[in-house]
Image 1 (cartoon, rainbow, N blue to C red):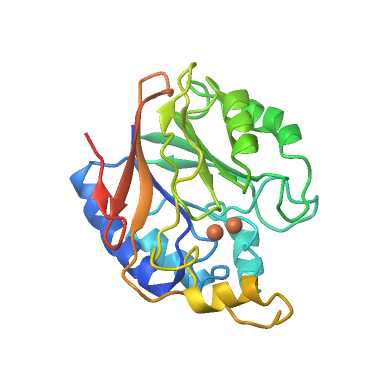
Image 2: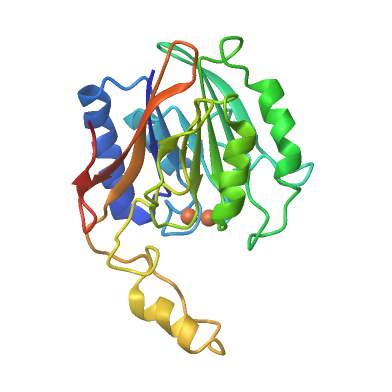
Length: 269
Ligand SMILES: [Fe+2]
Ligand SMILES: [Fe+2]
């Protein structure tokens, strides 16, 4: 299978660009599935029901999120009824929505889980304790043909540890949240595709997607806690990875994709 994963969509310009490109890329690469992290899609903070609907209409199969999932309150009732919009699996018991899903796609069955790390992140249940639940529920060559885990977190050490714990058991582990792409995309020893962070889909002439002056002020003058952050309005770069799996569900290749804006470079074989 060929699967496209796009990193954190930040703001309107990036999401309009992403939705347009999804349609083209699906055709160009004969994609079997498209998964998008949308935690910053609504003005940089959270996501709304209509934004989710637009992504599904454009061709996304499953949407993932992270610590910003609840920034727009109207998403609570939507996520409660959805099996295609995920919030981190290790949020406390009773949290609305799903953290893991299995959906039918044209060419088979797709399993996706969204987890959030513990270091430097809002408190959640231990991310490592959730690994058995993922392994027991998403079984390659049994109930899923392809499985992807979005590991949302700050610390590269934790993301790599999780990826190695899942190596050989899932098709891909992809990192999100830092909004900066890493250059370590690889197939791990036992066949799982991995990247520490795919990077955001947003304006890279910014501080992780936000206007530079506002974000800088927050660091320079922490006493002015009220400085509002606004999405930087330059041309967005779409950052993602294209993963190709084998018949056994493990991966053959993972290639980064960067389209438009400051970081544009297409690194596809
Ligand atoms: Fe994000
Ligand atoms: Fe995040």
